[in-house]
Image (cartoon, rainbow, N blue to C red):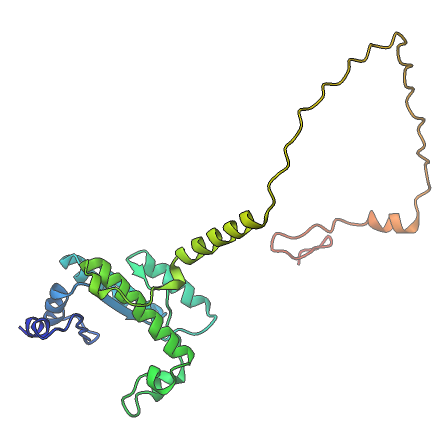
Length: 237
C-alpha cells in the first residue's frame, strides 16, 4: 500500500533499507523489489553472511548487485572479495573505501556529498548512484529513469567517438597519394657461359688457449637455482 501511494504521488524510485538479518519481512520486501543491492565488507565473515540474502533474491527471481563497502585501499583482499562475489551476481564497478568522511557525515545527519562535495567519498557515491540508476532503468525499461550523466567509467562510446574524430582529422590532413606509374619490365639478361668458380671454405682460425684462472672459477660446483628459488652449493639450504 505504501509503494502504491508513493507511485500515485509521482515518486519513481523508492529505496528500502533493511536490517542485516534474514526474516520473513525482508523476504516480503525482496518480493516487491525490482533490484536488490547488497553492500558487503571485504571480509570472510561478511561474505559468508551474503549467501542467505542471495538465496532469498534467487527464490523471488530478483537481480542482485553487490557493492564492496568499507574497503581498504590497495588491499589484496578487496580484489579477492570482488572475484568471489562475481561468481554469484553482478559486482558494482565502484568500490566504496573506508574513509573518515562517512563517519563525520553522521554527526549532524548530512551526507558526504554535502560536507565535502569535491572529495573522493562523494565521487564514489555519485558514481555508484549513476551506475545503479542506469541498471534500474534497464531492468524496468523506463526511459524516465535514465540518468542525465551516463556512467562513463564503463562506456566505450566516448572511445569510439574519439577514434572516429582522429581518423577524420587524419584523412583530412593526409595528402592524396600520387599515381603510381606502371612498372617497366626489366630487360632479360642472357645467362653467362662462364660457370662460377667454387668457393673454398674459410680456414679454421680457432686457437686453443690455456685455461685462465677466470675460466677455472666458472667450472666450480653446480650453482643451479633451488626449487624454492634459493641457490645451493653442494649442500642443502
